[in-house]
Amino acid sequence: MSEKKHNEALNKADLEVASKMSAAGECPYRLKYHFMPPIGWMNDPNGFVQFDGEYHLFFQFNPYSSTWGPIHWGHATSKDLVIWKHQPVALAPSEFYDFSDDCIHGCASGCAVIDKGNLILLYTGHVETRSPMQVQCIASSNDGIHFIKNSYNPVIYSFPKDGSKDFRDPKVWRYQDSWYMIVGTKQDDIGKIVMYTSNNLLDWTYIGVTAESNGSQGDMWECPDLFPLNDRDILIISPIKNTKNLSPFYMIGNLDYKNNRFRHEIEQTLDYGFDFYAPQTMIDEKGRRILIAWMESWLSVKPSQKNGWAGAMTIPRILELDTDGYLRQKPLDELTRIRSNHKHMGPFEAENFRTLMDCGESVSETIVEFDLNKTTAKIFEFQVRCSQDGEERTVIRIDLLNNEISMDRDNAGCGEKGISKAPLPYCESGILKLHIFLDASSIELFINDGLCVITNRIYPQNDSIKCNIIPENGKVFICGIDNWTLCSIWE
Ligand code: DQQ
Image (cartoon, rainbow, N blue to C red; front, side, top):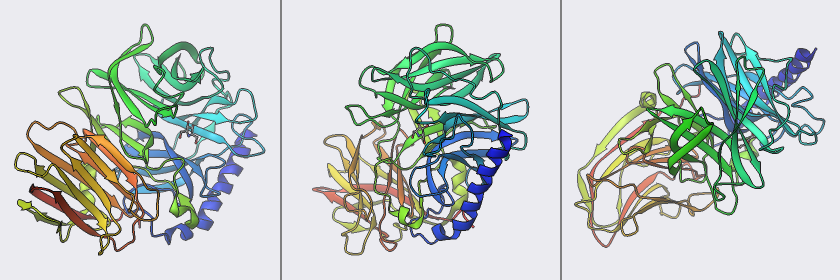
């Protein structure tokens, strides 16, 4: 009975996608090698997993509009995390625990696990007008494409005594012989994660609070992720802003299963850009811990909305722990497959404004290394996506006096403005390496092999493709620049 309702809602959503798909394709801001929805609105990545050799990415999806609305789980698969194939919608609001007549909320964020050869999705059913407002649910599939909601849903109905009605985004993993689930929540304006355990994914026992904000780390913790990396555990949180302007952060520590406590020594911002939220990780069959995030932010101007779509994912990033204990995020190796048209420049010195010919294409990858030992300028800029007259530009500014690196999009086109600032990572060798991924409406900057990352959406004109280097009061020494055009992953 309920399967019928769900299938009807899924068919309706798929028909909507099929009928509108060509419209979005016309938009100049469609990305060439980043994942994005076929049409409609997309936010958080969900259920990121490898199943039977194939990568699956689900996402918060409203097929009916380019703004947030009745939330479905969109779905795509990939053999290499580079080329994606859109699949039928996986989950649609249809039941008392995830559907309401106002149809605003629905199947909120969650994760995927594999159990007995089935692909299992765990998600939050959100009905704003009901109490409890958010409940945890489960759906399963044996072919990885068609999902049936469990008749036992919701598998967690009430929020725990340490939480509140904001109780969402389950992340589940297996440890020894049990399943563990963390869920984001809050109480008295303190963001928290709470933990449950289960033997069968259906009956869950509450354990308690695993970690919580120290008062300045957000009043609600969304989309938690907790996983081992080498001999440490990493906890990732997307906090709702409290007094500080918080973006997703990670903590490096250890999870004490016996006492259900996560203790950490290191806390860092995951990405210093404006457009990075709800990151989710998975471990693949090669043993790599891979992260992907929503490359967008809730409140920004989104120029693509008038063309019927909004939202994109970052490129996948491999997470590694450095010998000094810090986290590095490295661009997925497989992305080198879409490189073409390689150009190399350098070494050279620049003393004045200089345009780097052949280096600013709108869909490209650039690696530039500066030798800071030989550089005398204390401040210098590397500008990308510049118009011929230089009026339009996205500015990466290196400030050696204040040990700061920033990305200024005040003149970057028709999107949101603002300057993202990050501490310049320490480099003993004196070599500063910038690894820049440009797409039609995005820039991701990896600094010193991913010790620091800045991700932003930018909306320059198509022909703003110049690249300039601008030293201030001194010389900049460039060891070399490598640049590639990147090919489209979409047919
Ligand atoms: N977005 C989802 C929630 C999550 C939030 C709803 C984070 O489940 O907490 O679309 O972006």
